[in-house]
Image 1 (cartoon, one colour):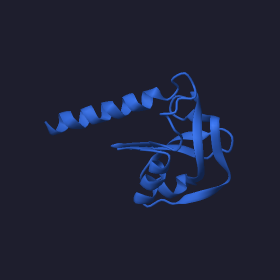
Image 2: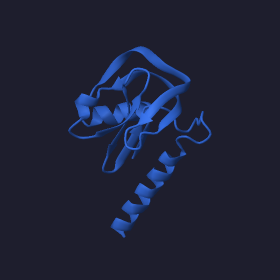
Image 3: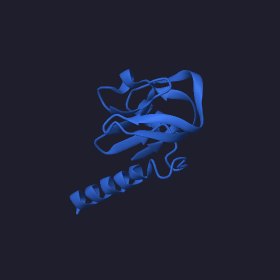
Image 4: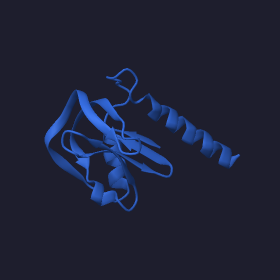
Length: 116
């Protein structure tokens, strides 16, 4: 499963987490997000006022991205699920987040091979 924006919030709640209202929402096409695995900074498009509280899902999901402006969570990963709070399909940078779709397709292929 691949959750985007509200999809991340729904996934977070589905695994027992909760969302928190941001003091200032994330709006615009220039929100810097850090990939915690690679250290790479991506410029993202965002439009949301709530965020999944990482502590509420820490036993079930790994936090994968942080917003550099306010240090809030911007992504999670579980064994068969990835999600991001921002909009990778909007592509404000050249192709900053394109790899997420490739990663999701790879996950689907691996699951298909397991079930064959």
